Length: 197
Image (cartoon, rainbow, N blue to C red):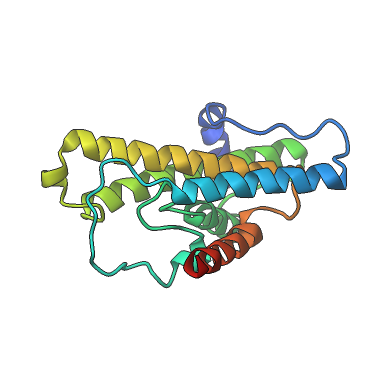
């Protein structure tokens, strides 16, 4: 039964963009370059404020978890790597508990990874809607439906960028195995750098 669940996801997985595996061995210098480009994109997104939000002097409810999730309040990286981490944990738990049966073939692993990425996008959309509707950026009644929709779309597009950057690193183009390590290290370093400046 578990395998059929993954098969039901197959048509939806095809609509999510993906990074292809490198056709040749990536040299160390090129991996450093791709990692630097990825970190630069992440840093830029951490500094671009969301359009349409109302500034707030209130305390940040996610202050202590932002370092772990590599997020930055009020910017495109508001959600950080939390959708990736959450989808990865849940999918691995479901596979480990044999609720989802994942075969050993590369085709089955690719389907599992695609389902994990699709689940990450669903979590991103859900988190974006919850953030907007709970008044994280101002009361939805004061913002208006159009502005709320624009904020959600910004967060979803930023989440898609993070998913693709993570996949770029996981496929072997960069150093490390993804955002679990690099995102947190970069978040800590950028917070230290910004506070010094």
